[in-house]
Every structure is written in C-alpha cells, then in structure tokens.
Length: 289
Image (cartoon, rainbow, N blue to C red):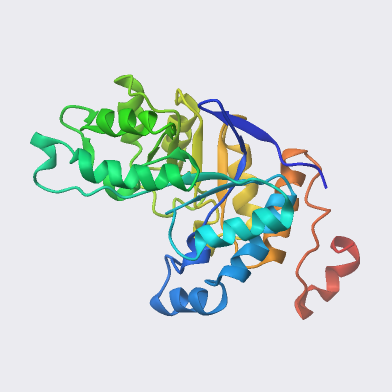
C-alpha cells in the first residue's frame, strides 16, 4: 500500500489524513447509549493503540485530539513503539473563558500551565478548542478577541499555532486581520452535519483560506457511509488541506485508508471489498470482485 500523501502546516510535515479521536473517547454525536458503546468497546489503551498502529504504518502519522486526555496519550506512545513511527500530535486544549475575557484577556499563568503541559508531551501543533475559539469570535468587530495572545504564547512554547472552530467566520476574520495562525479546523461534510452554514459556502471559505485547513467530521459522525463521505471530502478540498477521520477498529482504519487512496489516486471504488447482504445476490457477480 502506498504511503499516504502529506502537506505542510507552519513548516511541520503532516499526513493529509489526520486521525480523529472522538471514536476513541466516547463522543458519538448520536446518543448517550452510543457514547457508552464506544467507551465499552474502544476506550482502552491497547485497543486504541492497535487502531493507531494501522494508521501509522500507512503513513497517517498525524493525530488530533484533547491531549493528554487518558488513555489517548499512552495509546499513541504504544503505537509509536509498535510501528516505529513518531506521531505528529495536534492538540486542541481548552482555555477558560468567561465574563472577564472581553476586557481583560486570558490569565497568563493559567495559559502557561496548559501550554507547558502541551510542550512537555511533544505537541507540534496547538489549536485552542472550539469551546475557547468560538467564544472569542466577535461578529460586530469581525475579530477574534485575544486570539493574538494565545497564538503568541503558543509560538513562544515552540509549537505551531492554529484555531479549532465550528464557525466559518473564524477563518475569514483570522485571515483578514493577519492573525499569526498556521491552520484551522473546520467542520465539512456532504450532509451539512453540525455545519452552521451551507456546504457550498463552507467549501468556498476553505478554498480561499490563506492557510491549510483541517476538515473534520467527513462522515457526519457515522451518518454518512465512507464511500460517499470520503469521495466528497477529498474532491472538495485543496491539495494542501486535510481530512480528519475517526474509526472504532483497526479494520475500519485500514478500509478508510485504502478507500481514500483509491479516491486520491483516481483508481475508482473497485479495490475496497464491499459489504455483502442477501439482497446483493442478484448483482454480486457484477459488482463484487
């Protein structure tokens, strides 16, 4: 299998497929029962490491998540040992926001404690989580309040600054104000799942972004099948952009990697094994190889 294509974020080489972590940590975006299913079946160090090792072996070495959330960091270390591949850690830490922020900005001591921890575990790209970033977006002034503080402190810590956001305004305002940021997280999927604006509008915003964009939720948290979701995702972004994919098993990881390579290399859908049911019997000789 070919090594997965790469791009560059702030001088850091990253795989264009990024390993998502919601399916490791119990966040299904579906139901409480589904969250518990993930926790029961997947949220365990050795299981996560097994999945990560498949990604790493294929050159998908970039992992995005709320580091050092247990058991995620330990699983990454185990997968590195197993595969001999050093992970590129993209972290989305949370910083406290509240009524004091608009006038006073962030507490430097609290931010320093968070960033010291990020630096200590080897984070390469640090992107304040949506819960922080989107609280700072000001549509009246078309700015992102005090994001310049956070980005400067991330730089001082030797990490590449980015912004994780669910708001399309984040990309536009950061670009227009010249904010020192190297990448963005943006929700992008063919179903419009969790997207606050139409899919075609978001596609144009990503296409015009001055920095590479890490798209997330390409399969709409499992509501879109991989063939449809990944075909759309890879064909609707630029060569510098990324697609973040989460899976619940090593086999799912392998399947998403192979399907993505088929799409990127224009091989068509024929190399990934199709699922089979009794209703497919009448067409099986035609479509299943």
